Amino acid sequence: VDAAPERIRAFVGLRMSAEIDDAIAAFIGEICSSGDGVRWTPRGNLHLTLKFLGPAIDLARLSALGVLLMRVASETAPFEIRVRGIGAFPSLKRPNVIWAGLEGDSLAQLATQVETAAFEAGFEREQRKWTSHLTLGRVRDQSRARSTIRAAAAMRDRDFGACIADRMAIYQSRLQASGSIYEMLHSFEFGAAGNR
Image 1 (tube, rainbow, N blue to C red):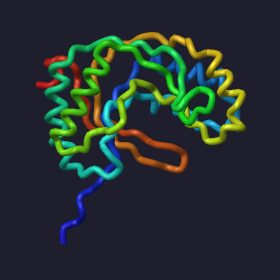
Image 2 (image 1 turned 180 degrees about the vertical axis):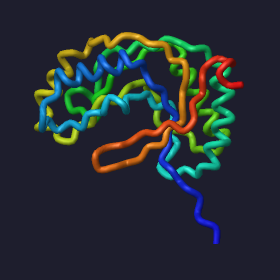
Image 3 (image 1 turned 90 degrees about the vertical axis):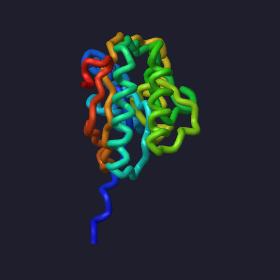
């Protein structure tokens, strides 16, 4: 009897530069305190999700998606992303997720192309409107997080700098008690040269 195909939790994402990761880590260090009721995103996990693929994806489906993403990447020129502003879902008054805003002319277009490629590869379309953001932390306890939330709101105009986005990747996400561990499975460089 053949073993069931391996299934993984996966997403298509984009990393920022090391300088931006450093700036965000410094910001989190300024506003967080121990026992503040927020699970902060580790520096190495900071990313923009272009498309969450699902919690149990057959690896064979990822290779079909990879071919389509290679085409999208080859038609996408590297572009600038500015990381600026602090916000929260649903709001900074009662946040569940604290995030940093992203500005980039090509971001929404890229996300739409990735969504279309994923649909063509057999993945379901996302029903919610896509918003470009970096998740900085998830609020686990509103009362313990009050002072941290106030500190974040006071810095809502914080500018973390800009970087050039030159690739996207498919990541596997392993959920553990201590948080998620991300492993890059396939990388797709923007511009035709990287995808021969």
